Length: 376
Image (cartoon, rainbow, N blue to C red; front, side, top):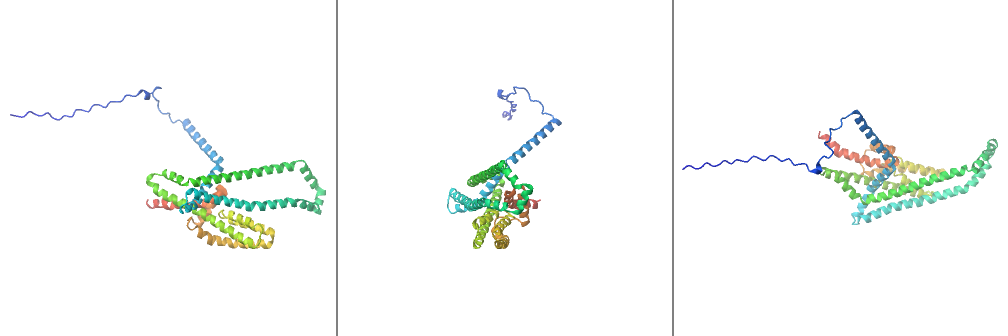
């Protein structure tokens, strides 16, 4: 008896895909969109003109906000420079807020001492000059040459008319208003700079973490290592520059005190502050102090000139290389060129920022660009 044939396994055909109906909320109530606009010369020119206007507006906004941008950059630079001192205190089991308070208090104390050392001598000199003005006037009136000129050109009469007409009062008032505006602007900028530095110093770790998170994860570790190296270099440069300035100020104060020079502390502080400026700062401070010494006597002036000539050689060839050898690794020629470009672009601030920026660029070229070029 033969077996009945079994039915073959036949897979039923797949059902045709159903096209979902468009829901009413996604319907096109205003009709089907038309074709894209043709690229007419008018449309191209209009787009290019709008781009030029946008770039011009952005450039004008940057120029207008230049002072604010400079304050922000300098505040961030100072915060990065003060951060190593804060971290050194943190390594001694001190909370970050306490370390920031100590470091920032030291900065404010320096500015207070600088003001106390500079303002009283300047005020005394101005007061003594104002008190000596009547004597100078009497000496001028008794001068026979001036009497002859007055009889020929009526100089004193014209000066008296200028004073009594109110022209002198307007000029003095305008000068006082302008000087007051400059002093107020400098005070406001200094206060803003201190506040911004305090905020950046307090939030520097979070700012670093946020910026590193913007880098792709595959490159984040290497970018973080390079970024930490750059920030350490900037911090070392600021700390080293401050140390060199302190050495210059203390050495100058000791020398001027030995010579019994008037206002020795104020002049030493001027040398310390000007020594922060790259390339020309030490020379500016030396020239100022030497000129003040020459006003006292030729002997003091010559002694100060010889002292600064010898000290600058010691600073340039002994102190500076030893202090900066672990902070910035930049060739001397690159240092000079960077300082010149920075000074031309942003003045003294640019000259101060140029050297660590050049060190950062050199590090990126050495660690990123050169290895990539060697693999091509």
